[in-house]
Length: 287
Image (cartoon, rainbow, N blue to C red):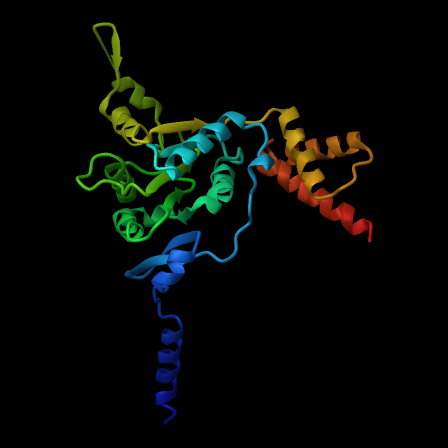
C-alpha cells in the first residue's frame, strides 16, 4: 500500500466502524426499553441497556396523577380501552418520572417503553408499523414536547393521534410530556380573534389550531409547583432513601430551602438534587 492510499484506507475503516445497522429483531423482541434512533437516512429501534429505575412510591405529592396514569396503563395491558395521555406542567414536577415509574411498575406484565425524541416524530408512522410486528404492549414516550405551528413533527403527531386513515395499532399508546398545556406557544394577540356569537365565546383560528393537537390526547394530567412543605417532604424522603441519618432536622431544612432559593425553584427535581448532594457529603464525612 502506498502512502497515498493510507488516508483512504483509514477513512474507509472509520466509516465501517460508524456504519449504522439495525439490531437483530430478536434483540428488539426481548428488549423492554428502547429508543428510535436516526443517523443520516437510516432509522431503527435500538435497545437501551442502561437506565435508572424509578419507583412509584418515590414520587410524592402527585397522588391524583399517579392513580390516573396507573389506571389507564392497567386498562391498556389488560386489553381494555385506554387513552393516549398528555402530562403537562412546570419543569421538575414529576411528569417524566411518573411515566418511567409506571413503566417500571408494569414491565413485568409485558409493558415496554419506546423513547422517541421530538426530532424523530416525523417517523411516527414508521415506528408504529415497526412495533406492530412485535408482541407485547408498547408505550411511545415523547418527552418535553413543544412545537412551532409549522413544525412538521407537530403535524405528524396531530394526524396520527386522530385524523389519519391509518390508526395507531392496538398494542401502542402515546404518553407525552410538555411544559405547555397546548404544546404550542400562546400569544396575547390571539385572544383578540375571539368572537361573541349569541352569548357564546368562539375562539379564533389560531387558538383553535393550537387546541386541536392537545385535544387529541384522551387524558390530560396537569402538574403544579410544589409548596414549601411538599418540597421539604420530597427532600427528606430522598435523604431517607440514601440511608442518611438526620441529626439536626432544622439544619437540613434550612439547607434545603437555601438550595431551592439558589436554584430558583422548589421542584421535585431540585429536592432530589439537594438530597443527593447532602447525602454524598454526609456519607463521605463518615468514612
